[in-house]
Image (cartoon, rainbow, N blue to C red; front, top):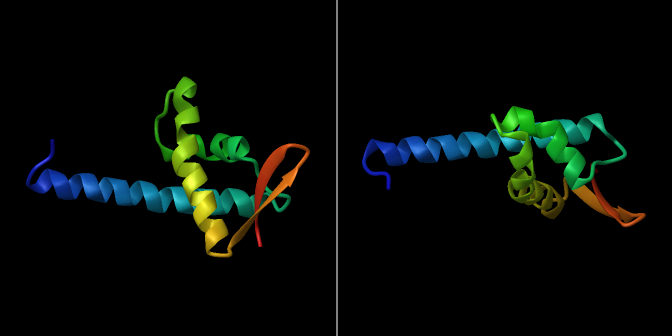
Length: 91
């Protein structure tokens, strides 16, 4: 449990993660005009998002998918399905 200044530190750290994730995911999509699957996006961004043990990178599916969905909802990205895979690309 956090209290006092620890709360602000934790919230600041969370905000930095969200801002960094957004920037890294957008950059990854910019570099791949054909789009990226969720797995490909995680592979490109994981090392930039923190010191994750390789076996735990799959846990990034939650925040990365959230960012991809947000980009889609705001009209900045589009999700397309092909050959059983979903790919996101910038529009």
